Image 1 (cartoon, rainbow, N blue to C red):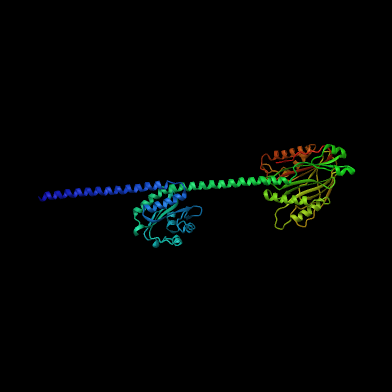
Image 2 (image 1 turned 30 degrees about the vertical axis):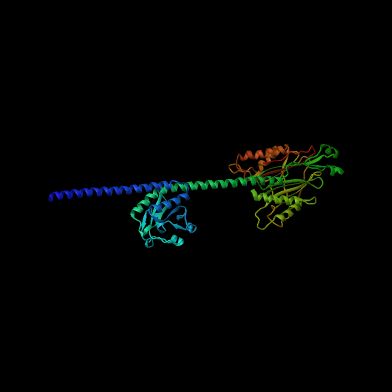
Length: 496
């Protein structure tokens, strides 16, 4: 009986042991299943959105729920500055938290970001790595915490931390392992969201830039129209009359053929110009108009800058020139008066300028030079000569500058060529300049061409030389002919 009882007891112990072992395995399996389901739920949560701000909220809410913590935060790495920052902070003091930045290695979060090691802290205040920078700002006491790195493709992109286990208990090792398991899918989803966020910002910036560019282009087109509105749109044909019939015969732009015959006119002056800004608007300018009796005023200038500032300076200069030019003015007195208006102590803008008054009947040309490129005279016989004279400084450089008058006679058939340095300083791909020699050779070859053909061939020659190189400066050319009168032309100017 005793033996039987012993055997029965032994069997009972074995059965109970097997049952307990089975129950332990069952509970372990249930725990592992529960952990797997939690991780599956976390993966679903963090992959349910691609938007970074929404994802950060889900990460913090899910992490707090899974490990039963009071709070959670994600702190991202700013590689460029070597700092950690709160991209998202909720609550009343969220704005203050977002202003906080931690150096890599500073505080527990900084230590984790620097080492890549997870950490469990049971008493945060007593840990030597603890930094109260955040807690003081939000007035939130931290008792205990877990902090793990967020690693994507071998790079630490941030840290995930949870604060204060609910119920007053410390976090367990299992909590830490669970948070590490959460961090892996979280990091991958977060990096994708950050890339998407950067892409969205780039697209938005591109849209803003494109809209601004389109608006600017529209404004520049308007500015171009306004600027070209300052310039004569047609060539000018001015006739010099004989004797008492002068008043009836001095006309410009359009003249009926019968009026020419009635007046007995035999001498005329033709003016034609070409301009091509380096940008939508530029600083080169020209003008010509009839003044007094049988006289033609003309001017060509080049503002020191390009673009909108040059265009504004050009508009002011042209307005002053036209407003101050009278029948009694000489080019020298005109430039002296305009310079006094333009000069300012703090201005860096100036304009080279050349202007003249041609007496069509006598051929006397009075001119003044404000530091401009030397014009060329093409004599009726084809000889090409640079026109020299006493020079002054460009407009706007010196307030008390007095500009001199120079005089020359243009015979019938003579031609005057004015140009800006955008012609002679035009560069090819090797930065060689077109220069005065090539200009002189071109004018000699084309001495017999009419005004429109000469302008066309000059510009074509410059473009052929530059061979596609970017135009670096504005280009302008003005031609004035004194010649026997013929039927006037009203062909529009070419403005490219």
